[in-house]
Image 1 (cartoon, rainbow, N blue to C red):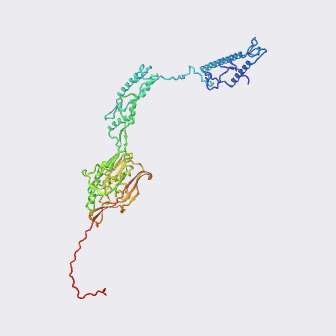
Image 2: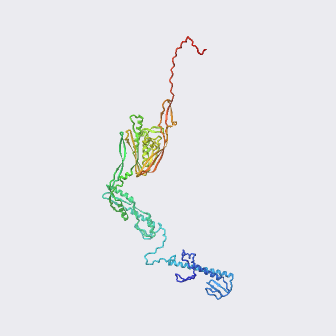
Image 3: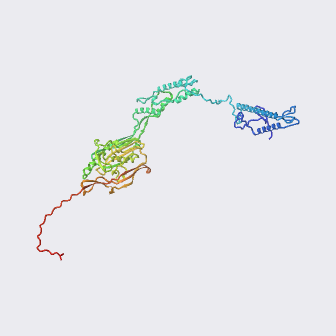
Length: 636
C-alpha cells in the first residue's frame, strides 16, 4: 500500500503518516484521554514498519563505512536511523553496551508515546471546547448569535431543599401578605390568617320574593382551601419562582345543595312525590272483624323548585370573584316528582304469598272436646296474626316468631289447644295451633326468594300444609316457647314487608284462611318454585314394634284401646328453584327433614274372668231291690 497524502488538520499544519491519531470511529471520543487509544489499520501498519526498521538497525553489524539513513551521519562513522539506530565501523558492540542502548531505545519510544498521548488529549479538549463538531464527527448546530430571539437553555441545577426556615428573598405578595424576608414558616402562618379572615367574611344572601332569605356562610357551604397547594406555592416562592397572588378556595357542592333545599322548602307549591301508605280494610268472618293490610298509592304532583344548578353557578362566581357578601336571587322552575307511583310499585312489588286453611268450629254432630280444641286453635291463630300483621325488614335483618309473640302462657291470654307432644301424640298447651301461622310464613318466604332460615319440622307430619298430604312433607315449621323458634333473615338485598291477615274460606263456613304476603323490589321475570322428594318411607304397621300398656282394671277380654296417633316415617328433601323468564337458573335451597315412624300404643286388660258357681243337684230316693235275681250271663 502506498503512503497516504499528508492531511490538513484544523490548526493548519500538515500531518505525516507517521504520527498516531485516534480512530474517529471509536465509540468513546474520550478514549485517548483514558489511556485506551485506538489505532486504525493503516496507522498500525506504519507503526509496525518503523518498529521493525529500528530493530534491524540495532542488530546489524558493519565493519565498513556507516549505513546511511534518514538522519545525517556523524564524522565518527556512526549512522543514525530515525534518530534511534547507531552503526559503528568498529564491529560488533559489547553485550553490556547493547543492553544499555536497548533500554535507551525503549525509553525514547515511551517518551514519544507519552508526548503523542498528551497532544491527542489537548486536541480533543480543544475540539470539545470549540464545539466545532459533534462526538461522532458530524457538524453541530451553529451557536446562536446575540440577535437570536430564542435564549439558550439554562443548565439544570439541583434546587436546594426548602424548609420552614428558608427565607423568601423575592418581593412576593400572596393574599395581600408581603413575604419578602419572611421564612416559609412565618409566611404560612400569615397567609393562613388571611385565608381564615376571608372565610369569616363569607355572608352570601339568597332570597326569593317575600320569603325568608337564606344566609350562606363558609361553614354552610364547606368553603376551604388546600394546605398542600399552599405549601407548594410557598416552596416555589422560596425558590424564586413566580407564584399566584392568591390561594384558590372551593366549596362543597353537596353541602351547598343541602343548604339550598332548606330555601326550596320555604317556597310553596313545590313538587310532591308519590307516596305509598299501608292501610287496612275490614274482613268480617262469623261475626268477628279481621283487618287486612294493603298498599295505598298516591300520585305525585308537579310544582315549583329552585334551579339548583343555576344557583350553584352563581355562588361559584361570587366565590371566585371575591364577592363574599353577594346577594343572589334564584330562578324557580317547574319541577316533577322525583318519586313516582311506578317507581314505588317496583320497590314494593309482590314477591310471593301462601295460604293455609283451618277449622275454627265444629258441626252439630261434632263432640264437645273437638269443638273446644278448634275454638282454642282459632283464638291462638288470631292472636298471633294480630301481633305481626305488618312487619318491615331492612336488608340483613331477621324475623323471629317467638320474639314477636313472646312467651305463650295462659296468663298472657293464650288458649289451651292441642299441640304435638314429643312425637307421641297431642296434648293441650297454651298457644296450641300457632305452628300453622309459622308454617304459612315459611312457605310464603320460600316463594319470595328468601333462603336463610332457622326452621325445624314437626315430629308428626302436618296435614294442613297442602291439600295433598305428601306434597306438604318438609314444608312445615314448628315452634315452642323458649324451646324451638322459627326465624329467617332478609337476604334479598332490599327492604321487604310481610303482611299477615285472616279471611273466610269460600267453600266452607266452618273454615278460615291464613294469608301471608311478601313485598319488596322484584327482579324482573324471576319466579321461585318449590317441591319435595320422598327419599324413604317407613310404614307404621309393623306389629313387632307395637307397644302395649297393661291395665289390671281391664278384663283381658276387653278390646285394646289405641292411645296415640300412629303414622308412617318419612325422609324428605325439599328444593327451591329459581326461574328467569320461565327458564331454570339454579336451585337456591335444599333441606332434608326426617319424620320418625310412630307405632301404635295400645292399652290392654289383664284381669281374668271369674267363673260362675255351679248348683248342687237334689238327692234321689233309693230304689227297692227286685225280688227276682238277675241272671249273670258271664256265669257259666
